[in-house]
Length: 464
Image (cartoon, rainbow, N blue to C red):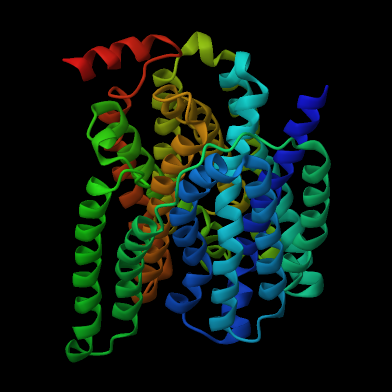
């Protein structure tokens, strides 16, 4: 019975992050108008979360191994609480972005630490437990947009951050009583590697932001310098990781075919799915003229689809294997992106008068079903490659997904900032992301096929 209580306690952390993230997406249009700022700058309220979580996830996984899962997990909750409080009090857009950075340090730590805790509690049914664990996110995605839409309309956008604090307290107290101190393995943190990787990604994303603020060709010097800095940081990151005995990313490991395929898949999946979903409420309000509350409700069908699909997939995952759910799920997400991209221009061209709400409900439901099928299979396929290092593998996987999401948010903000017709801008974004996701198909076949069997297959390849 105790392990089910532990499952519930760590699930609260994922529920907290999910509610917070989806509620902020609903509040995003009001944050822009409240501070009278540009879409490019306001986009950092979303992308800073992706960026920081990218660097934190692999570090959190390693920190759990070094300092113990319980201690690291509780410190993460405390950091997230402080960040939420500062977000609620932020007097300007710059300090809000800074507060979101602090909040993201805690949020980025939850997934690898919680996954490792659940894996330890359910060793004999890890695939099913982690698969069901994945369904926690869409539950929060149901609560977050609807609750967030109501909070924003009733109390303003700051209320979505105030709401986090009592949930944080409950999660902290439950974790303190239910989690057991775990064995510490020792070692050290690769802070230099994390700093170089974060520096490279930050320079790349800030360069896009600066291009958006550039008014003439002469002002493009700084973006060019930042792009060059991104390349330099990445060069030194690769060099450092190759020489470090305890790297944040084992580059030799990434060269192996299944690991390389899994992480490229996660990067492109993050670009195509995670980043753009932050813009769906903005898409609903700007293209279809929906209210803030309605734009939040639009996200509910996606979450319902994710819960149903991830639960069913988790139950039958050992029978279906990993590849079939990933292929079907990815195909469903591609179709939803294409439909989102062509719906508005096709309706306008043909003069079709159809309820925008009904269309978006169908598209979001389809997207949720696809994501719900893909997530449990992809998550377990990565862990299958190194089941004894769940936190580390989950952290690296999350890092690549978050990096993809951060890049997607920056590029989407950039494209929408320069487009004359916001509807056309979203069409370009949706269709472009659909194409990127199609390109992930060959990568699925390089990843583990099913529980158990791939371990011998890949070990044979590695020894060859």
